[in-house]
Amino acid sequence: MDKELQNSFQNFTALKSKYHASRYEDSSSSSLLYLILQKVDLGIKLTTLEFDWLTEHQLLETVEAISQEEKRRVEELKKLEKEFSHLKNQYKVPNFWQGFKDDISVPLYPILWKLNSEKQLNQTETKWLQNHQLVETLQIVHEMELSQHFLTLKTKYKAIKSQESSSQSPLYAILKKLETKTLLTKSELEWLKHKELLETIDIVEQQNLEKQADFAYLKEKYQAVQYHDVSISSSLYPILQKLDSDKKLIYSEIYWLEQQGLIETLAIANELEQKREFTALKAKYKASQYEDSSPLSHLYKVLKRLDLDEKLSEQDINFLKNRKLTETLAIAHEKYASNLKSNVELGKLLTDTEIDWLKNHEREDIINLAHKKQYVALKKKYGLLDPGNQLPLEPFYTIMIKLERKERLDPLLLVQLIEKGRLSGDGNIAIAHYSLEADFYEQEFKRTGNKWHIPTASSYWRKADEPEKALNITNLDLGKIRESKLQSAILVTRGAAFRDIGDLVNAEKSAKKAIEFHPESYQPYTLMGAIYYDKSEYSKGDYWFTEAEKRGAKTDDVDDEIKRVLRSTKDEIKRQQAVNYLLKKDSQRYAWAKCYLKKSQKLE
Image (cartoon, rainbow, N blue to C red; front, side, top):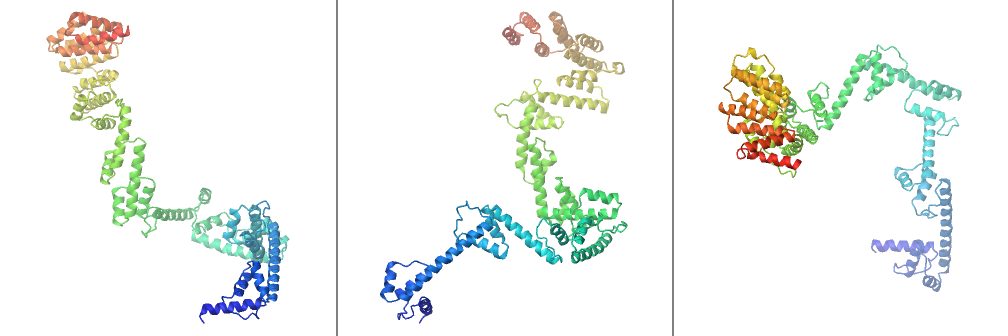
C-alpha cells in the first residue's frame, strides 16, 4: 500500500471511530461514508440524500453523533461571538462600525483576544488598529503599555510595595528618571522618603555615588578640574556628559564655560565639534576613505571651502587629485558649475577666468545660457532695439560685454559699430563707448602730462553727452601752454561745450580767443558759424562758415555742422526759419533740409 492510501485508510478509521461508524466494514477511501465523515469534520452541512444514505445503512449512532457535533459547534460559535462582543465593549470598539458586527473572522478578534491575555500587541497589530481609526482602543493599549512599563520599573527599582498604579503618579516620573539616570530633585527625594520606599532610595544613592565618580572622571578627561564644585547638580556635569556622548553644545552652554574660564574644556569641545563636522563633510562629499580625522588636516579646510560654495584653488584641486579623491573632485566641479549657473540665472556676468574654466570642463551649456541671458539684459540696458529678437549675437554681444567691463573697443569692433550705425547717434552703446574713450584720454593726460589729450578727452565727453566734464577738463591756465595750436584746440572744444549747455556768450568768447591763438585753423570759424546759427543770425553764421572754408574746412563739414544745429534746435519756429533760409539761399545744396521743413509743417 502506498503512503497516500495508507494515510487515507488511517484517517477514515479515525473518523469512523469519532462518529460511531466503526461497524461499517468498507474502509475504502472511495466509500461514500468517507466523504460524508470528512464533510462533517470540516463543518460542511450534509444534504438530505447523505442523511438518507446513513439511515439506509443503519448508521443511526453516526447520525446522532453528527447531530450532536453540529449542536456543539453552534453553541461554541455563540460562546465565541458573546466573548467577542464582550471584548469589543471592554476595549471600546465603536458599535456603529458595521464592518465588525460580531464576525469573529475579522482580524480584530484575535487582536483583542491577545490584548486581553498577553496585555500587549506587536507593531503590525497596533498599525491595524491605527489604520481602522480605533482611537479609544489605541488609548487603552497605550495605557496598558504604560501600566506594564510602570510595573516593570517598580520591580526593577524595589518599589513594588507601592500601591501607585497610574501613569500620572509621581512615582512613575521618578522611576523613569532613575531608568535614564537623571538626577532627582529634592522634592522627589522627599516624596520617596514620605512613602518609605527605602530600597528605592538606596538605589538613588548608589546612582549618585556612580555619578559623582563619573563627574570626577569627566572633569579630568575634559580638563575642567579647576572647577571646584563637585556636586552632580552642577551645570558643568550635564555639559561634560554631552561632550562625552559626542553631542554638540548649544550657545548657552558654551557661554557658561566661557564665563567659568574653562578655556581648555572649550578648546576640547571645539575640536570635537570640528571632528564631527569633518566626519559629516567627508560623508557628504564622498571622502570617507581618507583616514585622517584631525581638524588640522588640509582636507578639512578643502571640504569647508567646498561646503561654503567657495571655488577651490589649484592647490586644493591638486590635493584631491594626489589623494585619488576623484568623487570629491567631481562633486566640487559640479558644485562650482551649479554656482556659476545660478549666478548666470541671476543676471551676473561671467569673467574670462570662469568662461575658461567652463570650457575646460566641457560646460559650454552654461556659457551659452550666460550669453543668451546677458545678451537680453545688455540689449535692454544699452537701448539696443530688437523687437523680434532677430539681431545676431555678434558683434553686439562682444561690444556690450567690453563696455560692461569698462574695456575700450578695439579698432575692428569700432568699425563694426560704425558699419551697423550704432555710433552715428546718441544711443547708449555710443555714449558708453565715448565715455570710455574720454576717461581713457583723461587718464592718459594725468599719466603722461601730454596736453594734446585734453581736447581729445573733451571732445569725447561732449559726444558722451557730458558737456560739464568737457568744461571741467578744459578749465586750465592757457598761459602755461606754449603751443598756440593746442591753446586754440582746447578753446574750440571748450566753446563747443558751452554751446552744448546753451551758454552762447562764453561759447563765442572761447571761439574768438581760439582764432587769436591760431587764426589759420578753420575749426574756431566753424564754431563761430554754428554759434550764430544758434542765435538765428544766419547771414553772420554764413560769413564765419565761409571763413572756415577759406582755411580748409570742407563743404560737407560745414553742412554737417548746420545739420547738427537743426537737430539740436528745440524751438520749432526757429528751426522753420533756418530751413526756409537755407532753401532760399541754395535749394539744391540744402535739399536735405526739406525733411525738417516737412516735420515743421506736420507739427503746425
